[in-house]
View: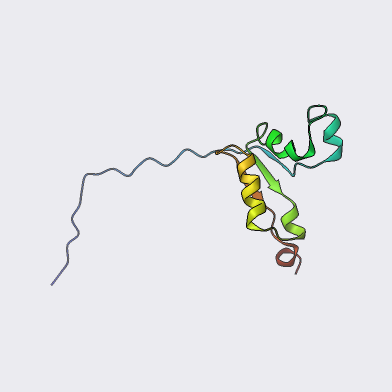
Length: 96
C-alpha cells in the first residue's frame, strides 16, 4: 500500500527580513565619560543611556566571569524591549 501526501496551494510564508544590529563591546569605559556620556551622568545609568544610542551591546565581562540571573535581569530592566545583548563566550571555552 502506498501513502500519498496531500498537496495544497498554500505558498510558503515570506522569509523574515533580517535585522542589522549596531552596537559596541561594553558600556563602562572611563574615557567615554568625557566624550560619549552626558556630563555628570551617574555610572549606574551608563547602560541605560548607551542602550538608547545603540540597539545591541556585547557583554565582555562574561569572558572573565559568570553573572547571577539577578544581574542579567537588572540589565534587561535598564534597556528597551527591542535591545539585544551579545554575551562573549567564557575564556574556558575559547582558549583551550
